[in-house]
Image (cartoon, rainbow, N blue to C red; front, side):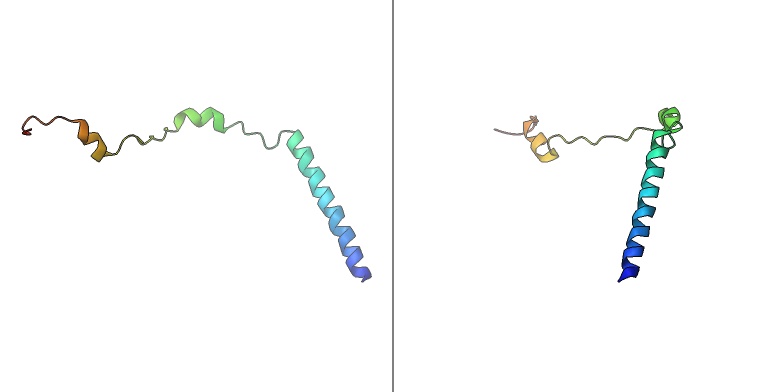
Length: 69
């Protein structure tokens, strides 16, 4: 049973160490991305598909000249 307490204490100390190391690296700017914004203009924009009226409903409003009333 005492082994569980020792392992639990060690794991908490390791977790706290890695958390502090993560906080220090974030504050120092290690994860800041300075490369992507400079090349973003080189990427092509994705085309947006038209989400308008479906084609069947759109054809109702077209007047066909050969149609007899």
